[in-house]
Every structure is written in C-alpha cells, then in structure tokens.
Image (cartoon, rainbow, N blue to C red; front, top):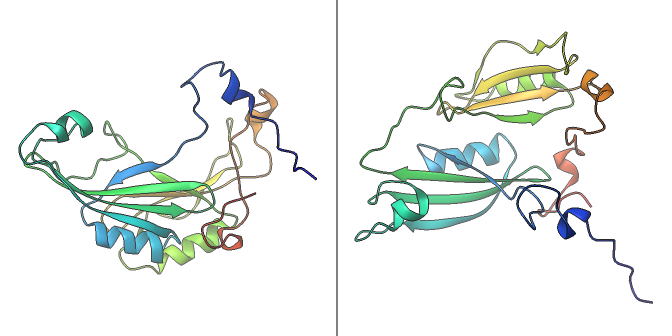
Length: 201
C-alpha cells in the first residue's frame, strides 16, 4: 500500500510574508577567538555534536572575502558546524583579519547577543555550570514577577572566552498567551532522548 504523505505546509505554497520558500532557520553563527576551545566547550559542557570542520577560507589576491562575507579582503576563517539540541545548528568561526576588533560585545553594544537554553530545572543546571572551569555565572537564578512572561526564571552566564549565554525556565503558560494565539516555540524533549543526530519526529 502506498504511504500517504503529509500535506505540504501552507507557508511553502503561499507565504503571507517573509522570504519566499523559506521553511526554517538553518543555523546561527558566532565568531570565537579560539575555535578548538569553543568546539570543546560546546561539545563537552553544552552537549553539542560536532558535525564537521572546514579548512581555512581565504582569498589572497582579490576582494572575494569582502564581497562575499563583509570582512577585510585579507581575512581568513576556520569554521565548525555543530548540532546543539534537537533543532539548532550552530556555526562557529575563528577569523583572523588586519582590522579585527577582539573585544567581545556587551549586551548593550550594537551586535550584542546571547544564546539561551531552555532547562526544566534551572537550579540543577546552574549548579552544573558553576562547576565548569572558566564559566562565570552572573549571580543566581532570577524570577520575572510581572508582564507578559511573568513566571520566567533566568540566569546569564559567560563562557571561558566571554560569550554571553542564558539559562531560562518557563511555566506551562505565560500571561501573553491570553492576548494572542501565537506561541513561543518549545520546549522539546530532553536532548538525551535523541541520538545519532536525530531530531524530533
């Protein structure tokens, strides 16, 4: 008997807005000062899977690096791609460049950023990170008591090279849900339930 295929997502056929034919966010990329150190941290501490590494990207006699990547023409880049949890791909770059700014941006700087992890038990997660060499927790878990995400508990932490990350734990329902049918994505099942690079069905 022929297998019945699921219907195509409406967004693939006639998107109301956004990029035509787009289906999902493919990856998030960060530039790190030491690719080997960052890969080890993402794998050993955060639980990522290393998918592949690329050799050095460079172009010594033209403007390709500037034209394609918006960096100095003589910049070089080494790249690693990781799978982080059931649905997220993380691309890490280690650049060299004559005009490189080597200061990590603060959250208040243009281009400031952080990567947040949903956890079911933020106190247990914080205790784990507190034991990891070089990790700096910015205090203890904090609680949001008012507004659209009242009930949220969160905590920022820094990687050994100063990248900003966050733990977050949310109740089953949030106040903003009373005003819109739209929902934040997640949470997924525990990462340990997925193996061999498989995501949720």
